[in-house]
Image (cartoon, rainbow, N blue to C red; front, side):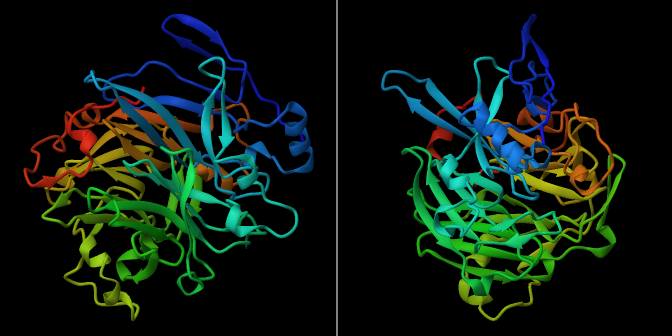
Length: 457
């Protein structure tokens, strides 16, 4: 099978740039209060060793470009501050996930690699080709990345990667080939592996799918760190304790989907997702505690719980507990379902809605329609938002058009399908009620934020 890559052009600053790599295009020029399309792909393509290597992968079915879907984005900014300067020299790396939801995906996690021109963008398998290669025979589960949905980079440069261990998740031949595991890479020190953790079999159900992760650092040295991981199909939350290298499962009715909200209609495609907990966002640290905000995909409500509760392992050793008084559910609702969400340092929740929009809510207010605001919408550029991060003063998001992976409807093979978008947080929320007071009792453990504001460029 051979896929033809169509040529694109990009106009930047009045100059016309012809694209050599036709699988991707960089769209230039930011507009205040909007989301700028930073990268976009017609089809995903990788840094194959040679054209022959790429063609061989296509002919053998190991690389089927239309089956490779970008789902999440994460950004690492290495801030090198000179001794005699107040400014920072920033080295930026952009990572995306390409989960193996269908056959023909050669790598599940990759780094964006700009080419000779701004628009010639390829994906380099991370940390290398070998780790991402699925062998024909027995898979070395300890040294292979099978499939990754979403990631998290903390402010120390630790790259948290959850490998779900399943192949062809959206295909009839879906199968689990390795136990789910957590990998932590050190982006500041040569991408070395800090830790590998295999989740115990007792914490993994046949239907388990670990889809999202949030990282909670609770001390300045970051030894006291917890990761919260969504098991969307088993309707559970897994807590990982970095210091003690152990995990436990939290079972709560608050993580379950609402059956009457399981139907989605996205750009003319009708879908049913009975998906539980998916969206995660950590609130600011206040009086040595913070809230984890969360919601099921098949839901229009928001929930939250104090993380000191989640970190109490003994409370959850006997399975489902009465969550009343510990877990909370909003009394009012969004207009439609939401996928992913992020939180600003001062407690503004920004969430992606399945009507192709972004919304915001200041967590110092009640979760009611009066305080929920739409801050961006694009039916073309923001179809099926599936990944989002806040880095510095910007929000980064992925629109994946994931709905088209569930239908036999013919789509335009030349159309842009995957986008990474970037917007200034302050510009997005400035005309809404989300942009107001800053709580004076918020604790900040990231020392870089006390001195400098970093750009994503």
